[in-house]
Image 1: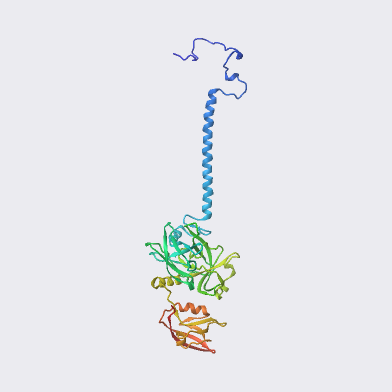
Image 2: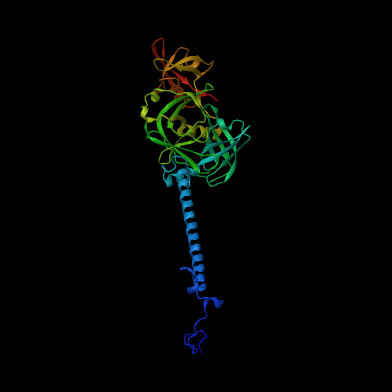
Length: 391
């Protein structure tokens, strides 16, 4: 049976009443060329809703993509997943992954404020090398590893003359770095400083320009550090100590936390000015060979064992170490050395200045007998001194 409004209805055509006599009007009779029927209006609402939802989804997606791009841009500027700093992209992922676990973050609760330092894991049993000056007066020391684990640390021993300290945490199986001597590095080579910021467990990386070996650093308190590594940086490390390494990630030194007042040697003066930029400054580091020797002594005995000759000397104008005074009953006095003598060699090591003499003595230990070449009143002479332990 057909529906009542079916076109096949047999009732025939019935003309509609005039518009004014009807409650209902055909959509085509309503004024306005763009009027729509109720059915089409309903379909248009659904279509509009669909379009609105689609636009909303596109907008949200675009916003997320924009945020992701912005966030990614910030990450690119700040560094990689394992490092931050101006040169974090200069080192390969493999180098960073290998070195970062050995470069630790040290929080020092000092007498007045908490400070941050950087340390180097030198033994897998938890021994860490760092600068000694920031530890002065510390009430507590916390070492944080790159994986987020934190440990209370104790001071094993310090070498205040060289701003070196060894601290220890209760842990085993820790990552230690690859180390390298400085024989393969030349003036002008790019090296890297690895440290930590106060708020980021990632290693902080900056590039540096290698300047010179054998530097003497005179501090504001009148003390001197010898045989230091000088590097030129445009960025100041965020902590008072930091690790110096090669592009391959081999550690070559540990930056001192001290600010030098003067630091000039012939090697420094001969460095071409093109090695540094106008905005750069010089940072100094103890070599890895020396700090490893110091650490071995401290871990074994609690102190640094140094061979002692028993003199105070100064640089001579024509070269050599000029003796100013000789300690009573010292190896120097027993060997016949006196004030005014000019030391020119220790063993077979040439002595060009008083700093050379300090560094040459590092090669010997207590009870070593060493030949001392010197000049007295212009005459060349030599003697044998039996060194003792300065400690």
